[in-house]
Image (cartoon, rainbow, N blue to C red; front, side, top):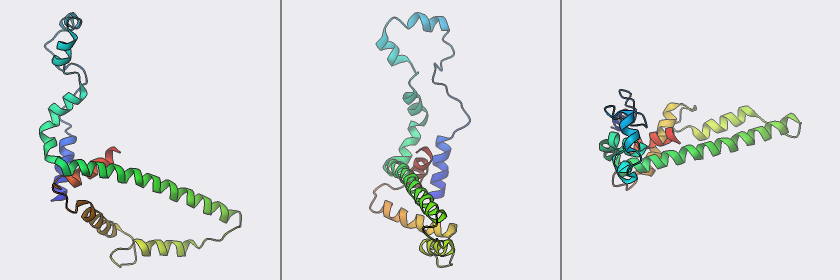
Length: 169
């Protein structure tokens, strides 16, 4: 079910059949008509112009945004937060590794990388097969998803929103 919703969400936001410009989409107006009417009344031009990117987006995708709903919005925000947090954790791990490697190079410490690797795999292994693979990631995702969806009244578009949030962060 989640995979189907993810596919629907990606199809909605990645419709490659049409190309849209931020400019005026009405090709029947000539450049002379546009320039002659542009100085007359600014309030009418703002109301009649379709140059607003948000308005164009809402006209095209508005009917589909309701399908994402509350859960999709929360999923999008959660996905963005997880990606940002993941980047920060990666920086901390990278700096820690560079520091330890520098200390090892200078002879201050000795690092047993085989023990470090085995301990990391043991802590990340979720299914008890003594390796860290995609099945372990699936177990972790199921647990994280269960926590994030707990008592959420509208969770239908959460996974799609989460994936879009990680993509756009």
